[in-house]
Image 1 (cartoon, rainbow, N blue to C red):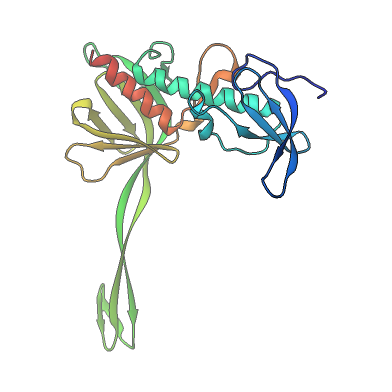
Image 2 (cartoon, helix red, strand yellow):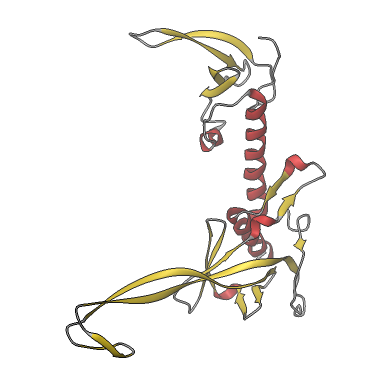
Length: 256
């Protein structure tokens, strides 16, 4: 094997080139790169690209979460490092450990209450709401005499549907006591005592509030990133799951 590679999984040994026989009836030899320390194997599939062939599920179960696409070893190293970073970041955010290190206050147009701490404030966030619509299809030989009124053989068939519409754009603020959205048209306040659900959804989050039938949907956070340290390798966009973990960390820290 020309270039030597450290194992992307454990980083404790150099991958060793081997040829193994597979198949019980139609036997064939395949080239693998195997780590002598953790046992992880990468199978050569095309050119210098490899797929995961085997790994210890007890120690490295997270590898099953990574799409097993053909990659060169350098790409595997980057993908695994980024996945581990996100996994550790989410767990650390949920515990509240990193709140003081990753405060993200770009825009927070609110007046803090006494002892209120602002942890996050991001501008240009879109607020969406599910809305019901009704379309009426008219058939036959009737003619319209007024809104919704037809004379003659016409028949009205209503078609109802629900659609999620963007209704406002503004700043999304997270403090130690509430979530606030300050939009161009309205301001929404969600005290934590009225927060009933919190979940990632597509590129944003869904927030359930007590007394409200439909959840609130916010999107546009991926324009911003969280970075730990000075290396760009440890930078990731604020996706829905990261934002949910951040808010859970705020709740956990302030419930202690």
